[in-house]
Length: 627
Image (cartoon, rainbow, N blue to C red; front, side):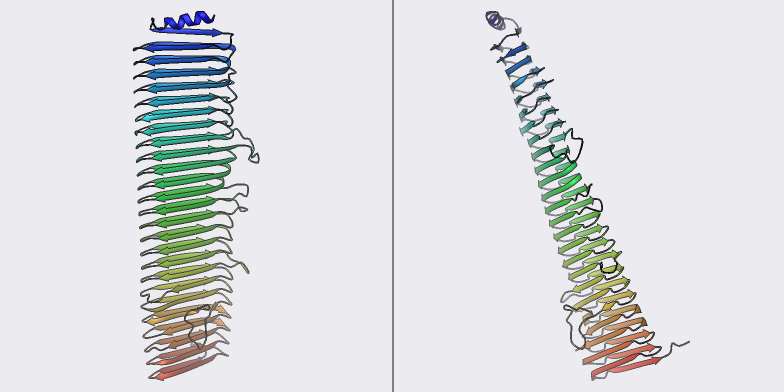
């Protein structure tokens, strides 16, 4: 039998088409060598045989080589082709044990295919290497646990495809090098503990990895997948899709105008995205207990992340961008028992970060060191925390937090910064807190709080001009503080509706807007206007320097107003209290031409005005409300 095979192989040197067969035998070796064009070679080794080896070497163009090994074990197949337009095919199937298949082609327009399927098991290995352009390589492994599949292509316009089906512990790798316009896909279905790696070098490449397991229950932690995609060049597109209990995705892109997309579904998902270059885009979608780390370096980059948690599982997002014209969009959703965290860092100009979190116990930290940046943050339910730090010019931060026990800390450095912050839904002992610091000119801070035990503090730093602060609190036991220092032309407007509200600071001493900031305008041509409507409200206001206006209006009972003016001239202080048992204390020192007017209607009111200086005036009017 062995002598017959040798004879057939020898005849392959004479005829253009050669076939070799081995049936029900072991330790067989088949070798075909062909030189020339349009040749065909076929080797078949099958049926309960083992330790078989099949080799085909072809030198020329438009040749065809095929090896089939069926129901064998410890089999090895190898096809080498040199030339253009060649086709190579290896099939190992039906209860193959420990099989190895390799194909190596050099030239353009070649097609290589390896199929290991239907019961192939125990460390099946498939390797394809192609050198040249417009080549096509595919590997299909079915029910081949512990299999290894690898495709390497060096050229342009190549296509690579690997499919691991029902193959646990599968490892698949595709590498496309040198040229561009390549297309690569790895699919691993019903494959537990699957690992995929895809590397592409060049421009205009497309890479995709799709993994899913056959897990039926999320509590089963036995199923996991891991995918890594690396692309170097411009105009590349990378995509990873994973469905499993535990998924890990890593995407690394270097170049310009690249697009990366990650989609994960399961219990625990981790996505790491790193993009270096300009005008890159990153998209991450997770439905699980999520963790995302994204870094973009360059100009004109954008990132969008969507995370949805379930079964009291929280999400985590960490991003970073370095460059100009960057954008980050984050959307996190979890049930009431889960917490989510988002951390964003941007360095560059014209950056934009938008974070939307839903659930309880959300946390977001945004840092922008850039110009023309915009931050928009929306957090729902209760116990949320937001920290925003912007350094630059013409920035805007819009923060909306709902329900109770929310905290917002915002620091803006530069010119023309704007802030709009809304907190609502607090209850006794579960108030919201807003702390805002602004440095620059033309700044604007608007804070609205609804409920009880809320705190709002806004400080605008030294030499800050043309700024405005507006605080509106509706509820009980709220605290507000606002100060603008050593500037001019700034406005502070505070409105409180309810009882036991406080705007307090020092008292007969300069507060300098420290720990108990109160409400103060330390500068010239400033306006400070305070309105309180309710019972047992207290206010402290400080207007220092020249030509500033303080206007305080209190309606209700048992309200207190304390106003100071230091080292200034031609300041106007007006206090109007309507109701019973009010107290007003005004202290003016060190200036000239200051005017104080106190009006108290109804009964049991007390007004005290102390003025030290020249050409000052004080007027107190007490009595019943005019009809």
